[in-house]
Image: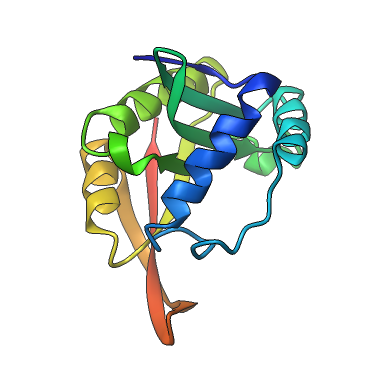
Length: 165
């Protein structure tokens, strides 16, 4: 498996991984809720590749995308240029096989090279597998966003997590 920056040609596969990850019901979008075409996602990749503190990474094995990690940050205002937010998704067939760990390791190296000091994310409180991965990667829980999501007729909490590089 290799991890690299996504290119426009990856868009269709990434969209499929997103749909699969969202089917878990542990993502911001519910199963089948996001309407994203490969063409729309190609434009997103192009925009991400043009930003100084943002990047989209993919984990690939034998030409197949197993997962993605999005880092989004801004260089202005200067007061927030040291931080990025993360979104990650791994295909259900690839979970528990080191894909998420590899994506985070690669992304953290990328961030350090750009003198990014803080990486932050949120996770649904019931997503134990993701929470354990984030803790393993050095993320700490900074707070709870109570009833921030409404999933299948019930309110759910999110954990704010961050890692200082």
